[in-house]
Length: 314
Image 1 (cartoon, rainbow, N blue to C red):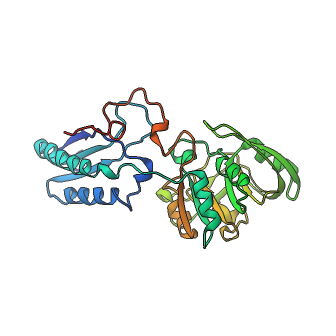
Image 2: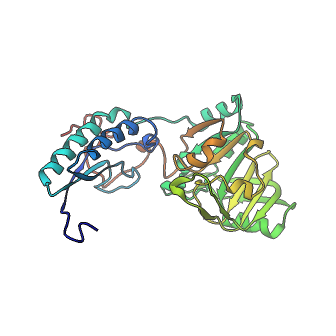
Image 3: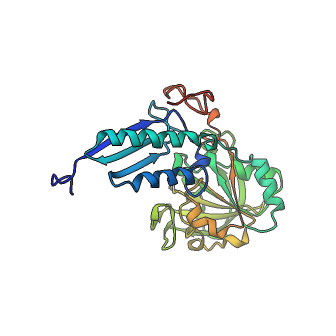
């Protein structure tokens, strides 16, 4: 409003860093982003600064602009904006050793579930991260759990056809389903089980959720417990794992399961985190893979850290 009334003249500077931060490292409650934000707060506290941001960037975008950026906006002082942006960018760059991480493999995560002293374990299906662009239809974790005889999982799968089949069959009916393979993932899953619950998929949450969302619509939804003791939440729409309120709406108690699969990385934590005895990020295959080296980039800038580890800045 001050700008619109001619009382303020914002001047801004942008620095695009030659660095990509892995999705596993983008939680602002943990390092390196906790320290990056502390550096940002010091810039924001300066009287000449109107606002400033450190953009983590979207690592799955194959565009020239992909990567981390710094923006500083000052009051009528472009030189100060450029100087502070450059300083903040150098501070971000100095923390680049923390921009990469590795998550346990599917087998490693399931072995931890099997030996977990307390449950439920929250398994974050990174490769099928709905918030990152996946469809939430991968069955990789439950397929491998079946092969390793890890029982007692609760797993969401987006599959409109399977959900409709269950609604037609009715609660208590025996069903045989062929679930989706998962975008970019080979191999589907045949499920024989019984329909435990049916729901219209609409639910609300008044507690902490990712970005404070309150109203959700997963479309016609079915709960099916398979003969292998895996319980599936089959939704018709792609809905991120932002709210655990979906579970009681479907008559489910997370405490009855050994592990709960969530199709996300950071977005499930606000709501699902307090329910979990342990949280494991799982390096699953998919279009939102935690391992960026699995992806084929054509248009990104070069060099970019960590793809080119010898990248220099400035």
